[in-house]
Length: 409
Image 1 (tube, rainbow, N blue to C red):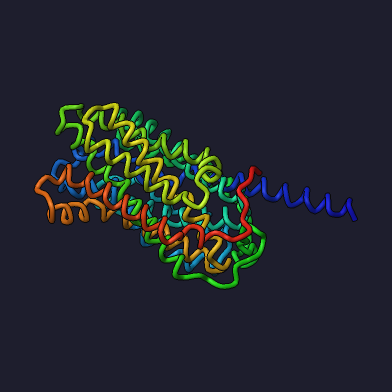
Image 2 (cartoon, one colour; image 1 turned 90 degrees about the vertical axis):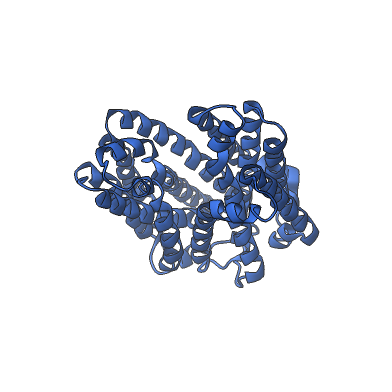
């Protein structure tokens, strides 16, 4: 009997390790939709007659497609297997990213391919958390969500640097970065399980499958994720303007400061277990507290060091929340519904990022004529309000199972 149990444990462990390789392949490509940003100027020079906004949309239109694909594919994933879904997403990424190497006669063509890339990205960002939740349980699941975020941002930094290097040669060469999707496709073919979500029942920390969706808490967590993405997007929208306004630096300095946001995600992803053990049921509140302190630095101290620290704190808070929310959702959602919930999660976070600039533009006008300082003041106010609301309502504790333990695995 003991021998049989050991054999089953070994097979299960081998299966999980195999799936981890597939998960790694997916994390390699989740942020490829922004890899063409370094080539925008050169594309504009190649097509001088094209509308500037259209050219700039090559680097951003994928976000819209990703948002739509995430929501729709959340439903589709309940009908097909993880392997098939991953291969579809990677095929879209490969087609949209590699075909422009050969077909690039007009901006319209490049925009079309950018849309295809966005669709593929949306599929992958829906499959990845669902597969991670189905593969792991408890603290190991939380750690895997953290590693996913760390690897996504780590790979994103590498691809953007390589993309910039290739863009200096030719903007067409920038598209060669998408060759990594072929590697990910092969990994997915061999290592992503050919299983349906209902066959890999998403289990809670205690090992029991949720049979009833707790929609009140689910919707609250989805809204929290959208809001935090909206707050973190302030850095992408305002950093260059902020540094220029206060005579701190130019575009290259802004790029250096924004690296601290990526670095924060990587560090947080690696050490998410430490944050969980330290903050327990106040982890979400702590995330918003970090954003509050980071935004306050931008308001009070106008130096590069303060900007870098502020960016790191905002990035840390955002990463804590965007790692924790999917984990909590896995406690609240039945296995067959989880892909739909995670599709909504991906769609709403994309919406939050895209909607951020417009939100702050109009809301800050209610209390100040200075949109720049008003944006960081409003960021701090929103963070403080949600932090207090989370503490008062004890939302995280209610979304956490009573017998859940924080432990090293």
